[in-house]
Amino acid sequence: MLSIDGSFLDFKQLDLLALRQTPVHRLDPRAKVLTTLCFIVCVVSFDRYQISAMLPFMIYPAVLMAVGDLPFGYILRKIIIVIPFALLIGLFNPVFDRQVLMQIGSLDIWGGWISCFSILIRAILTASAAIILVAITGFPAICEALEKLKMPQTFAVQLLFLYRYIFVLTDEGVRTARARQLRTFGNRGLGIRHFGSLVGHLLLRTWERAERIHMAMLARGFTGEVHSSRRPSHFGRTEVLFMAGWITLFILLRLFNAPQFLGGLFTGTMP
Amino acid sequence: MHMADALVSPAVGGAFWAAATGTIAYCSARVRKDLDDRKVPLMGVLGAFVFAAQMINFTIPATGSSGHLGGGLLLAILLGPSAAYLTIASVLMIQALFFADGGLLALGCNIFNLGVFPAFIAYPLIYKKLVGHDPRQSRMVAASILAAVVALQFGSLGVVLQTVLSGVAALPFDTFLLLMQPIHLGIGVVEGVVTALVVSFIYQARPEILESTLQQKPLGDLPIKSLLATFLVATLLIGGVLSWFVSENPDGLEWSIAKVTGTPELPEAEHREHQRLAKIQEETALLPDYAIPTEEGEARSAATERMGTSLSGLLGGAMTLIVCSLVGVFLKRRSAAQRKEA
Image (cartoon, rainbow over all chains, first blue to last red; front, side):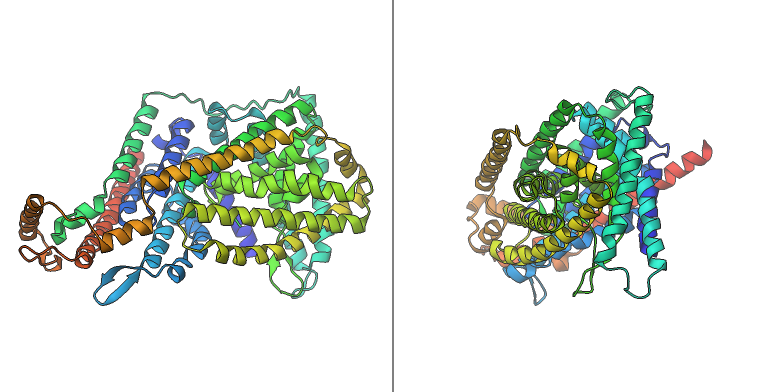
């Protein structure tokens, strides 16, 4: 029960972070969306046995978290939750890929372990990029950016509607789940049979809500467009600098293995 | 199961992004053409309903584990294919952004796996054909179980194909397939039963909701051609882009094997230069003990060289991480100080 409420509160908190006022929050959302996508593509394009060259990419989440004043522990917790999903598949790598690629002392390291670790780093980097994007931009602004980048308007309206009602309805879902849990003993009543009518009632209430919303919208002259007063944004010089700077850095880090070079200076091996 | 960014390659991710955005554009145009603006709030609120319903778990009989509603098929039954597809896509987008569930590059794959199959295959070609205009309970249950199973089998096949094509995970195709399909058979049956329970409840309480969707004939003129064209484009993209990638850089494994077994000999002059530089570096290095001793005139063995590079990689990696976090801490302190002044 606690976990249900917990995940719900978590969700709200991420949304609230987007309201902060920092230099990165003020950037045009398009710049942030495109830079994030570029970051993810660069990270994901690495060879499957690559580890060291990926590490410098940590600079992007680190800088954004610092400048955007995001709580490190909270972001970390959100990332840790999603890592098992990718790692579940990655853990099969050492089973199937036993090519010895590296030796530390007398210990043979299989290619599978290296690629599994690589998957872990990919998961951390890509998940942090997505969560930080929401935390410094906010969902409505991301929708607006995507709409300006030629996403169909119908879909943009759908995303905004979904976003608006998600908090109301998940609240209702949480309350329903809590009410049922308080009335059950052990596992009685948590089965599939009562689930149908429980969720069915929720669905009916949802449906009626949609009908009321529709009437209210018609009364206010709805024509298929959602107008909202969001933060005015404009793609200026700061945005161009932000994007160009980061994307250049990503490409450089993608092309040159900086840690290998740095380590080589200290151990004396040629990169 | 959601496809994750960590397992996807840019070519596969990009191809499915193209397929998903194409289908979204097509469905948006269709929903708009329907001119049924009642659907606009309905789609949004039902998407939120899927989240709410997922907060309510149930115990799965005989296993003792708990599950929750997926919702794809239910949305298709309530809204019809195009509107359901858009709703599923929007739900997945929120999951990718707020929960990093799947990820942004893998979003195209996930929309494809969890959207196209329930909305354009399982619902119109199975559920609707079986239920027809006679939504009796037994029929509805059978139809939704079958439809959910088919949708999830295709979906998990999609995950397997995308993972194997991406080549980040080492799981062989057949093993992965044998792992995924039976699990999703079970999930499909449970999803079908739950969907049927909810749908029959709605049918008893407010039959007109289901009848209006059933009587819609969006499929009469569903251009199968353009759907097939989307699939074709996706396939071509994947095939073309992937094969280009493959020929450009050999597969990671091949590449590393090549490095292990037969590295091309360096020309003599360059070799000497290399060793001279190595010697200078060795003298200046802080941790010379870890350097691999080189003997004059003898090429270093591939294994020791590899060990050298991996060691410097490890060390350099650790230092990079420290640098990154120091930059973060520094910036954080500075912006905190600025806020205090302001």
